[in-house]
Image (cartoon, rainbow, N blue to C red; front, side, top):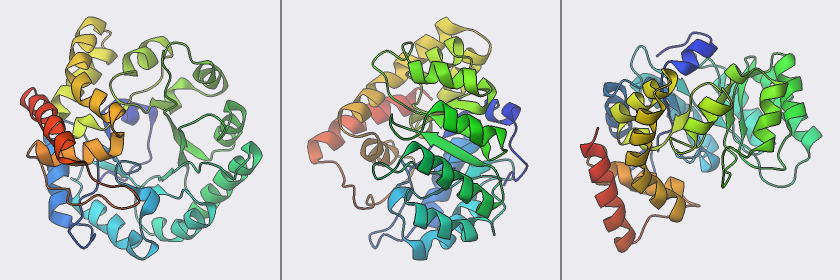
Length: 303
């Protein structure tokens, strides 16, 4: 596993995969199936893994947290960077800090809490977690009302931030006042587009931010890596062509649920059996599985 401090160049060097997490019928995290998915991603030239929402770290049991981190650390290849998550509750994240700091991960992502928060309170909570963890953290900006660019900028200035995952969904990603202000407040090289291939062209080309995360990269990693190369070399026509190939599965993720669809798509594409999805989420119905399976199989055939 790559345990070096994370630089902007490292962030830009690979698509940042956001995989689901495989479990058995008893909800135990599976070493073999998770390793199988990681090898598929690595074989496509992708070597940064971020375990957050798609892995349902929101609902992970405190009693399984350390063993899950150990499985991920052991499964990653020697050149692969792994970033697990903590939270979203403040108390949960502070207890997890003591566990995570015993592992060699260079950073962790703090999942955003929805509700029962203020901007100042979130800034304080993130700062206190970073101090207890002892390393800079990934700030995840997922919705309006969680934190503003001003608070994020203060955390960056004080050395609390490794990088920022920006994932507020816009109908038109080019019209984004929050992101426009954020790139003025903090270096764009610290910001990663966090919503997959669909808005990534606009984010990388127009806002000059640094790389992107993807869920569908777990199905077609080599294709997603080609998309990143097209973006970084300014071949926007090629990037647009590849983006359209991801659209059918992404449209299903947006239409049903991004996490639930990706969880089943990995299995239906024949990559790895992810098992049941952890509550408080639930699986897809038979009709949804049929259409997701077709889209996943088509996408993996393009890889």
